Length: 400
Image (cartoon, rainbow, N blue to C red):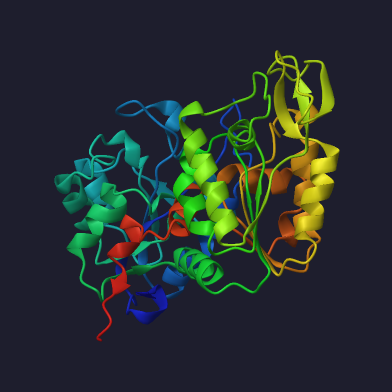
């Protein structure tokens, strides 16, 4: 797959529309708590400014219900961009209103205009053609640098790209890096290749599991999703999270692992609690001794040790999903131990998914990972072997 990249097209002195992913976490006072996604976009923005472009930035933020909502305004993003880029950031009053279109038209070389939250427009998530056309009319060049939303066929991601020819649209530095990394790691990994899959549900990761099992040497399953596999094997899992309808799928995945000689690891002990509560009474139990009225909220110490051993000889580690309810301190130990094990490994380590990226930041292991992806759903779809809608338009057709 050959991707059209920003460095291979002529953007000099032009008006550039960059779709970014500024969907960052904020606290109750709307203060940004982690600006990694904003910082990740700076290379592409600076490259455009250095090439005498005028720049229009677009992003979504949160899930507004319809129309302008103060708490979903991109004002905090504009403020942070101003600090990081050390230049004025113009914030439009809306997405495609007359005033915004006028601001875009009058934008001068070196100036940056940030459009308001893309999802203030109902047409954005519907991939509305009229909205795509209006967005495209603002610029001469379209750059997609929003890996985190490239699996969505939205107006500012997929629809807009139709209005630019192959010499006028490209992947930004971040998007190109993410695509190359995942493509390389899944198609041509250094072995042993170990995948750690966690998080709460099997359903969201089913296709990824089917695609990974034949490609990896070992697969480690933790988090809430492990209980569907444990129940499939006949274990008592109490009131732990389980997807009953996916038990047959869990059995199929385990059978596939056996056929492909892929070692599949499941928890051998868990931290069980009386309730889903940070203050709940908790204890460590082996998976043979789970109390019927309790629920598992983290992997236990023996499991952390087992998983650690499984990772010891890895040359490539792909990790998506925490091992427990890491947001509650009492149930974060398993995830923390795995994070430290991955970080101290000599393997190429790739962390995918918002929760996992958040986790390695909390554990202080962020700088020791080879690569931290900015997209959860997008990275999963790449692992599933899909071409993302937002990327498809940027693929150069190669002559046979």
